[in-house]
Amino acid sequence: MSANLNIIGVLTSGGDAPGMNAAIRAVTRAAIGQGIRVKAIYRGYKGLIDGEVKEFTSQDVSGIIQRGGTILKSARCTEFQTKEGREQAYQTILREQIDALVVIGGDGTFTGGRLFAQEYDIPVIGMPGTIDNDLWGTDATIGYDTSLSTITECIDKLRDTATSHERIFLVEVMGRDAGFLTLNAAIAGGCEAAIIPERATVMEQIEDAIGNGRRKSKNSSIVLVQEHAVEGGANAVAKMIEKEHPEYSTRVTVLGHLQRGGSPTAYDRILASRMGVAAIQALMDGQRNVMVGIQNDDIVLVPLSKAIHQKKDVKEDKWQAMLTLSI
Image (cartoon, rainbow, N blue to C red; front, top):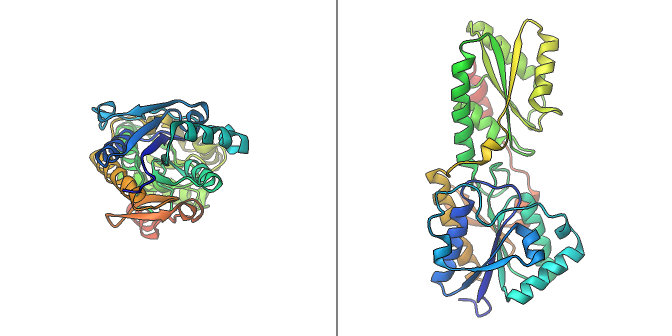
């Protein structure tokens, strides 16, 4: 064990994701198993600034692996974006004698953690906890699989209604600035189209979906819309359709925060557990400023700078699969 690694801090930040509790549990138990004390920081970077810290034992993380959300709570923190805010956070680090941080979250969480590490020379390990699956260097993020399953289940339920009416059903899906959730849910749900930021052909996709439906004599279509693919989201797309094709009736369903909730899938629990153990091992090996990722089912360490700044591309074969199967 590193001679300077006696106490670690762990926090969750940004949007919650199913599996975060499993990650907290894994980090805590893996650290304690190596003789390292764990300080849990509540409400993300805001809690680090305000000093909301509690030492965790194995008992504190008992019975949480199946729970959605995060027992450490989460909060957006504009103060941490200022040098003064980060200085306050560092004073908490000194007062609590924390030697390293494990931060669980997405792009914003990693950006803040990387800057903090650079300014105060403290080791930071990132664990990708976001339903968006938009971080470069990892095939999957904690919470993505659960959210995808939730969206697919909603599509299945909606199709029961869709088959009873001659309408185009538009379902708005989360994903920040990436279309991974939307595209994969469209494939899994057998949808006619997916409107995503990576493909700026909104009306072309809609025309294809309508045309495909006509050829198959379908009386309804389900189209997924990534929340930021079009200004105004699914409601804006509905207006486009009704303007160009007044003969079609549209209905909009915004899934919203429903996509974040629920008990994590087995995959997310396993992924979070593996990543949590790997995060502690990385710190013991002297690693810093890296994200724990997974590639081809192998745990990897990726520089935070790459995870944040490099763009993760939508797989072309998935796009083609959706187009091919929607005919």
